[in-house]
Length: 233
Image (tube, rainbow, N blue to C red; front, top):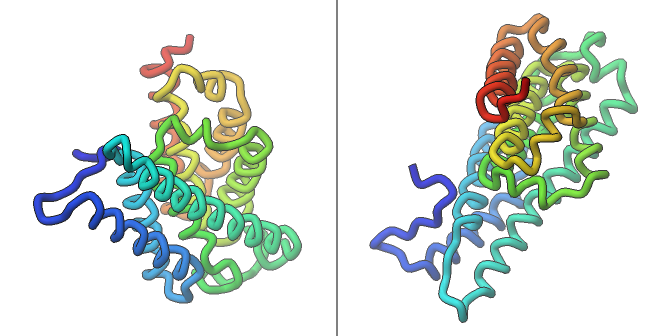
C-alpha cells in the first residue's frame, strides 16, 4: 500500500509524473460540475490521486518549486469544491420544500443538486490523502461551516446519495482526528463529536438502507477511534 508516498515508476521521471499531475489538476477543475454523474465520480478519484501523490512528493532541494506548485494545485481543488458545496447547500436552504427530506422532490442525481454528492466524495478523498494534516490547513470558522454543511447534507437533504456521501466525509474526519493526539479534543468534546452524534442518530434511522449502511460504518469508526485509538474512558 503506497498511500501517502510519492511513487515514480521506472518508466517515468518525477518531472514527467509532475506534468501528468498538473494535467490531472486541470482536468479535475474542468469536470467538477460535469453533467454526467459517472464522470464526476472519476473526478473524485482523481482528486484523491492528485492529493495522495502531491502530499508525499519528495524532490531535490533545488526543486522545491515543484512541491509548491502541486500544493497550490491541491489547495485550489479543495477551495473550488468547497465553494461549489456552499452554493449547493445555500440553494437547498433557500428552497427547503424541494431539497429537504420532507419534500416530494424526485430522488435522482440530477434534480438541482447535481454535483453535491460527488463534491462530498471529492472532499472525503482529499481528507483521506492528507490525514491529520487536514486540520492544520483549515481555519476554525471554515471547519464550523464545513460541519454545518455536513449535518445539513447527511440529515436533512432529500437525496439519499448526498446523505451517504456526507456521512463518508465525517468518517474520514474521525479517522484524521484520531491519527494525531493534537486533535483528540475534537473527538472528546468538540464540534466534530457533536456533529457526528447528530448524524448517527439520523443516519441509523434513515429510510434508505444505503444511508443506514454508511451510518453503521461511521458508528463503528467513531467508537473504535474513541475507545481503541484515543482510549477515552
